[in-house]
Amino acid sequence: MAHVRKPLIAATVLNTGICVIEALAGSQAHSLSLLMDSIHNLSDELALVCLCLAYLLPLMLSRHLQRSANLLNSVGLIAVSGLMVWQAIDRLISPTAVLGYVPLVVGILAAGGNGGVAWLLRAVQDQNPAIRLAYLHNLGDVYVSLAPVVAGLLVTLLGQSLFDPLMALLIAVWLIGTTVQEIRSIGEALLWPEDAVCRHESLPSMVNYW
Ligand SMILES: [Zn+2]
Picture 1: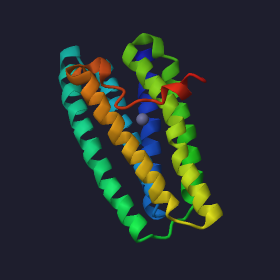
Picture 2: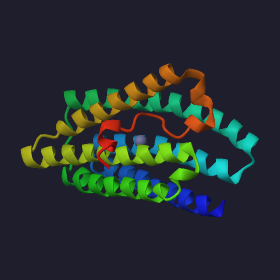
Picture 3: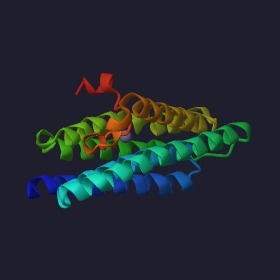
Picture 4: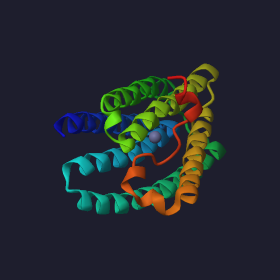
């Protein structure tokens, strides 16, 4: 079990780093797109923590924990994303200056970090379908983290801050859409630990290139 726990814990720690750095840099640079990707990675963080718990705690206990955490995660994710949509619309109406190079640089770091999380999970992905799902999900997230990079690039090149809330809006709508779709299509099955890992689609068409 230890050979599975170690990469799982390392992946969770790395994902924590991505969340914290994106949140701090996003708030410092007034970058909503970076904050939105931080929220997205936070939702993956809860899934990774659940996966760690499944390997650390007795099965029944971890199943119960994962059911509650998973439901809470979905509801919380939709609520926070909704709040970000409102914030992004507010920023589009009354623009705030954004330090474009921050989402540009931090987004690249986050994409690399998500790639690192996927790499750590890859070593143990054959152990469990839930780990494989988390691995594929984080591969897809490499591309999602590039959204703030595109926002930062457009803000820097064109000098228009509105590209940042626009990109945040896109990420938020994608996150809400895929979470709702997941809840509707899987229903009760969503509450089982096997499905606890992937809270939203991981851009399967892009994953196929890996
Ligand atoms: Zn994700």
